[in-house]
Length: 65
Image (cartoon, rainbow, N blue to C red):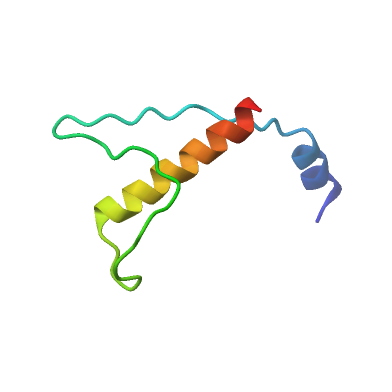
């Protein structure tokens, strides 16, 4: 790694942004503490969305602590 790349990486600013998720039809699943995926080889979109919502809720708790 060159010195220029190391210097550039050292000066990078990292920030997290809020991602808004909305639904135009039906409702999004709410965060839960346990997510069940019936078939790990072929999870459904709903199962994956529940997992994402649960992970987001946990990250929100950590960032607000």
